[in-house]
Length: 370
Image 1 (cartoon, rainbow, N blue to C red):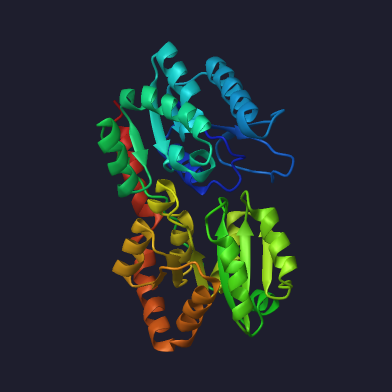
Image 2: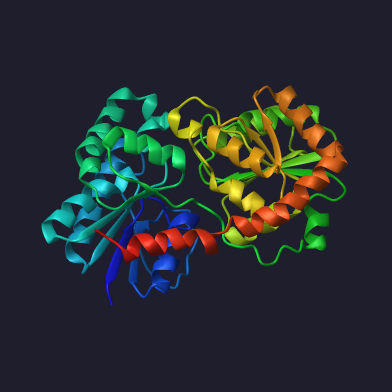
């Protein structure tokens, strides 16, 4: 049995893309080892494949990335491996070096336009370091896939190599029945909006979503997940006296999260077009909403707009003004005929977009490695 070592820089718990990938590879009769890190607040995990989570001394900025990459290098150095799967640019360098030393096949999964994230575009010197790593390694890669066509085209144009698309689509939600007792406890007779995700960071519209709630009556907002603005969101909730309308929960297991998603009335995706990474993004929360058959209110980002308008499953908004967002939510909730059409369309769309279909692309990639 061939062994694939999969590496990612997060704590594994909420990374559904990597978990789906590892499960698919296990089903292809590979032995899978997933390497990540463990934080002080990391939840326990129980997977059908082996996991290794490293505790780091540093958890921020340069020292964090340096320590993780050095420790990942030595993990990869001493573990038996046949294939290496690197997730995102922050794990690519040690994987690339090890693949050359041992002449092993390397697969690269780019979850986003890493060098264009706001955390780097706002720090040009740090961005240059990551760009230099990408420019050196990327043209030498033979097995690359990413999350959507826009990012694949970007890399094709920049490095002239073929990039396959494996979208970050949610698995089928077989139990779409809502827990009525749970719904009554969480929202009662009120309407509920949800914004979920593990990357609720700067420029993703969460602040405006909270401010929007000042202009909505008989509606509550749940923000569930994690991100670098999470503590600021809690302060904003307090400063605006919205404790009875806005509820902020730290990340929870996926199945538990989807219980909230199923009882919501509108799902939010409000990324701003402040950088190419967000402009080209197709967040996995969109596919979670689809599986929960939840109409979507989204900002006008290319991939998201194409999906929502083509499938007719929600509204696109061109502004992040809180009053405009509130009016769009009111429009969605008050137009019962249109809302029913979105719900009907979502039934068909949820059968079209699911991991059970999308994983065939992944199987093809690993069946034909260069």
